[in-house]
Length: 253
Image 1 (cartoon, helix red, strand yellow):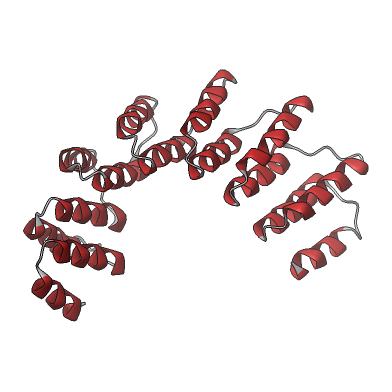
Image 2: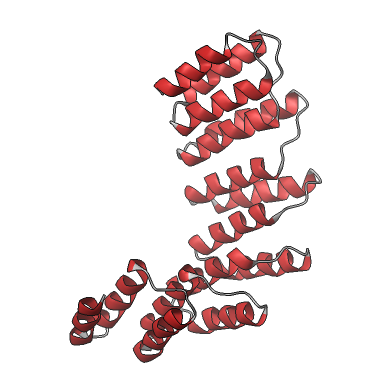
C-alpha cells in the first residue's frame, strides 16, 4: 500500500488525468483496499474527471475477487446512469463473481444481460462461463455453451481443460474421453492440466493402467507431469487398493 500511496503523491504533483486514477485504483484494488478505491473515485469526480469503463470494471472485478459480488451491482447501475456501457471484461468479472458464490441464476442472468446489451461474448467471457458451469457440475449447459463458442468462431482451446475437469469430477469417463478426442482432432495439444484431469477420471473409473500410460505419454510429448499429476495418480491408485504401486510411484518422483 505504501508504494501505491507514493505513486498517488507523485501523480498529484501533475495535472491528474483519468488513466492515472485508473492505475491508482487498480493498485489499491490489487491490495484489497476497495475503500481506498472509492475515495479515489470520489476524488476523481470531485475534480471534474469522469470515470470510464476501465475505472468501474476494476472496482467490479475487485468485489468479485473478494467474494462481495453483490456490492458490485450498484457500481454497474452507476455505469449505466452515467452513460457508460459495460464491456466483456465487466461481465466476465460479474459472471465469475456469482459463480464463486454458487449463484447460477445470477451468473446466467449477467450472461443474458450482456447479450441483450448487444455485447458479443469473446473468449474470456465464454471461458469464464464454461469454467463456472463446470465447477458447479452443470456439464450439459457447459457443453452447450462450448458448442456455441465454436460456432461463433472462438477457438475453445482453454475450454477443453475445464470440460474435462468437470467430467472428471463427475466420474464421467465417456464425457471426458469425447472431449479429449475432440480436442486432439481439433489439433489442440493438451496441457498438463488437461492431462491431469484425464488421469483423474481414469483413476476414478479404476483404469489405472491407462492412467499410467497417459503419464508416460506426457513425457514423450514434452509435457512433463507435475506434482499435481502425480498426486492425482497416487491418490487414485490408493483408493483402488494399490498402495504398493503408489509407494513405488512416490519413490520414483
